[in-house]
Length: 68
Image (tube, rainbow, N blue to C red; front, side):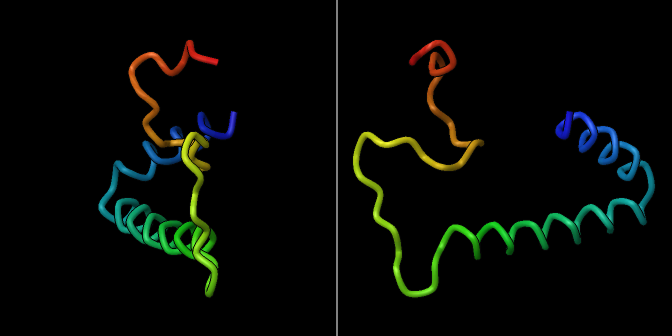
């Protein structure tokens, strides 16, 4: 439901130049926020092999949807 609402709001804002500016600023803000959340200040977390990425948008291959 959240993704559908985001899609509708994004498409509505993208119709005007001012809406595109708002979307660009929101994108920059969220990008900085995500980067800050993923990298702690003094302790970079090293991932172990075989563990999945915490990123929900990470590509997992063409048949990963059916894999368990």
